[in-house]
Length: 168
Image 1 (spheres, helix red, strand yellow):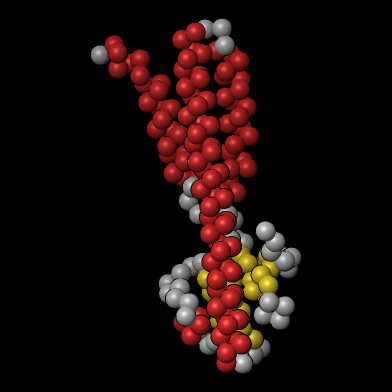
Image 2: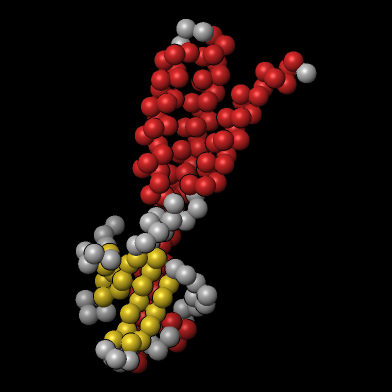
């Protein structure tokens, strides 16, 4: 039973890091990394400084630094992947819509007409507004919960919701 108590700090570190990684790798939670990672860095640096003279505490702290560094790298990599996948999807959707426009001389009534199947997707929204006689195409930002990209059909480019062009 005494040996089990020696592993509790290691197990607690693994569980906390796993739960944190699960939370921060969800889509639209990436912006929270800017709030979470700086305090984590400060806490781990202070704990390492405090434990530097005690070999047993230093071993545990080195383990914690390794685990949290791996978790942070995984969280950042997952969110970078989400952004790259979103940009790739946005490019594919825009190209399909523009191919349809070139072939038919007008924009499609639905994305399915342009061979894009995004049924029940909260990430892509395509509408035709009868009152303004305009189409709109939106793509949800994978990092921020209230942000979106909008396709500019006149200039054939994606815009952030503030009107700035999307650049890679």
